[in-house]
Length: 480
Picture (cartoon, rainbow, N blue to C red):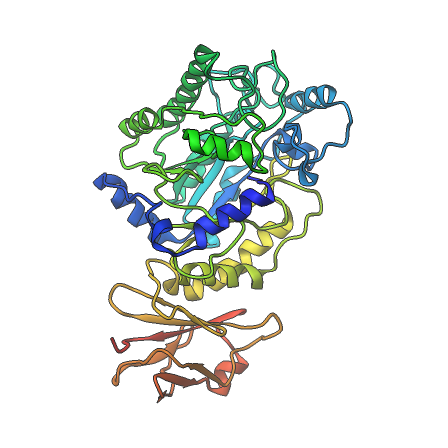
């Protein structure tokens, strides 16, 4: 999930620049089943991402400390890389999450208003959280401390639990695999995140890696029930043109050995969709036909984007578990949800489970607060689309297909009730429109002001508001 600053800036430019050239980078899907599911996904708005693996025992950044790139955020605490990598991979022997209870997670997520889950079936370190037959480096492997548990096939247990709650399921899968000898060949050093040998010189080794990758994804598409999303990470594993390779050589980049890494995405996706019709594929950061939606990471775009998108962001400061991590406040999280949805995106909120197999109390607390807000205001979130001018000051707009419009006032952190008057200068309710506040049972007095309107909030509502953090005005009809 982590990238160098240069790459992050380039990614941000790709995502946020609205000029015509970059709009062409998104290639719309044509498969009617995928389009139907993508439309469904865009309506559910709020999901859960979980980064979990053996690394949670050390409370470190997932996978990246075994990558030999000189970055402070993934620095190792040992000077001897070979010894460190061995100890890291030996974590399989002590990873024993005896508190693992995915039904508890799924219930908490549903109560918070989440409607889909994306789970890390395998991160870059190559440790599989599912019962793959392609590698012993897995949660059910012979060296795994958790292999005897009836819930050892963690991915299956997670998917089953969330499906029971009516949620979509997504498989996060890392294209690079730093444990596989077909990606990081022990014959050579591993200077960076990329394959560490020349694919042109050793094409048969690379083809073994392609086969290995396809086999693992085939397992996930075959043995784990209905899967709605294949969320592929590691965007450097892709086809590169000669010009892209030359540019990487000439620039300050993370690639010590820039080369094209073709894993046959057309064949991979065709096979996956044969088993999972309508599967949404998210080949992150790889412009092309297999990036059905884009994923601005840990950021919210400044404006609406001309394609389906999802902000992925950790609830705390880290994607993976860190002891005593600092979690965002309920006010921050609700504000983020409103901001993202009003711009047409989905919010994929990450929680890192502990090595024992549970979430911190703070994570459950935040979900509880979000759920209380959603129970009052979810109709302003689900199945909505953006409405220009989208946002003004503290007020964001969403709209249903039938024209019902919502003006969502997100207060400051210390605002415990809505103000006496809420203004919006660039939206006009229809002459006969009614305006109410969600969670109350009375119409509110409003008046046209220029090209906008103002709504009076009575004292009885202000003294006893229907929810905390943000208050939603429901407008029956607006002028077109």
